[in-house]
Length: 316
Image 1 (tube, rainbow, N blue to C red):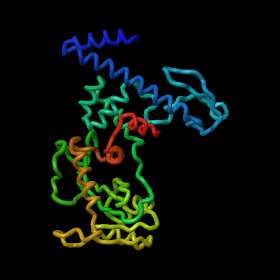
Image 2: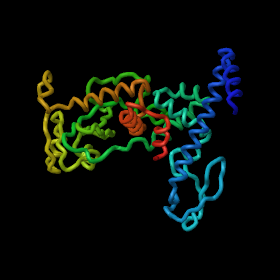
Image 3: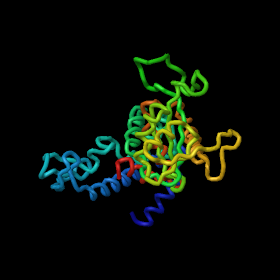
Image 4: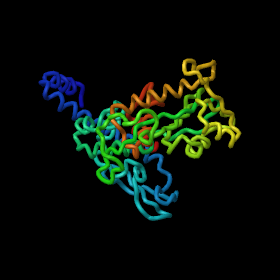
């Protein structure tokens, strides 16, 4: 388009009534989504070097379908595939809206608001959210030096369950009927490398050493020193694996003594609770994937980008 034509178009847009501006915004957003989708697919297509089904490296390009480069597994299973095959976004329709869905997730919007913005039903918005969360922010390994570790608790939720409920249903967001720790609270283990702030967060069955050990120990470096609140589970784990364990002061009014504290991990607990609050109860079965989403937001909190979010959602 020539400069004069662009100037004429911009002049016409300035004269549009308010109710028509939203239609223009939708058209621009759709076009931007098309561009972002094409760019992401091009990046992934250039990186394809094996068949996602059998792992064979003898692959050749095999034309296009629905705007996506297809490949043929020549030496293995003989099937065709595209750059999204085997990723959480495989077979999802309306790719031009995926970048906007990523923005909605960065803005922490509820499913009804996402559905309204994208012009899709809430079931589609829910499915896209969970597909996007699948590969976000795996738990890191190699936590070294002082590693602060403690558990926080999230109320058990059967949100979305229609039958075979183990207890009577409750209003979403309602507090547990029992005060303090109980079977209604689900423990979430959080371990943070004090130096790098790399954080492990995972749902565990209980506070026992047997349940904490498989999640925590494989992610610790040899020089790790556990800083804990004195729970017996960590002392047991330290004894089994030769890991030094330090305990914060028992005095509730003075929980910090120089470098002996777990303030960083407790602050992470507070951020997690605040971040989960707008969802008014996350189903316990989905809590682990929501933790992936939270870890990604924590890692990219300085400058979260929708394109980076979308790239990570497909494993890029």
